[in-house]
Image (cartoon, rainbow, N blue to C red):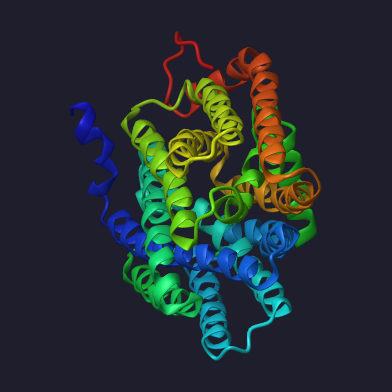
Length: 423
């Protein structure tokens, strides 16, 4: 198998092909809605702080829902959990579309409905990540599946904002919400069409709180998992929070409209696709620790560069680098957790991964919005980029010890021969 064909090796699994297609269509609509929502909020309020508040309201519920989702995904049929979550997301998009198209939308509606979406996302994200090994059926292809999922999501990050920019300009934000609602039909159909072996009946189960304590002890007593999750939390408060300021950049610094915002967010997606294809071409999981370090250096440097430019295309080029960095960081972290965690603990381990960005991203978004209001968007983005670089440096200092702890796990999983080093 050559390097190119190895990128798409996971498509040999029928369930994955169906899942990939449904998720791709749905995520295209999600990115259209996210772009339209950001533009709608800033158009209605002229407030960068309000952008941060809406992002906070949309993410913080996922922080509280993720632990419950992790417990349920370890106990119950993951497909049914995803069906319920996606149906709630579709309903939220329909209500947003009706409110915007009818002209009755108010800022508090957006905040409240963002919170509803955040509740659904807490269950959807955790369960979707935990379901990947079941969909693929081969542990050695999990990393390939995660990378291609990231590539698919980021194709949506290019196409969704770009299309949303034109739709908003000619038809208004409400049409983007309506299109997003329609795209959920694809993922609901995909979930129903997949075939899985019958799940064995569950035996006697511990109380949910005991399950949660067990999952916390399991995850945070193993240093590599703990370090990866803490780093994700830190970057969610710093580098990732900078991206919530892109509507401010598009209108007030680059003096553009919704098409400019679509270009900037599309550039982030383009970079992420490049990173995804690189990861998908990798045949080995060992070495992803180094990838995380380099990825965050690239991410932080891209954000620092954006703070100094006045051209849309220069900003877009730097955001391509930032997009590649953030995707490589998230997917590499996800792959390590998916690979290292025991099957009966995977849902709970991944719930803490989801909590690391859904719980720490919202205060980061809120602080970024207020900092931009007080200090300026340029200064805020530069500071957040530098903090991201600092996080990479600290993580790199612990890379060797992390590799030594991961090595026996990879050997036990049959991923690494005993005589090979790993970082």
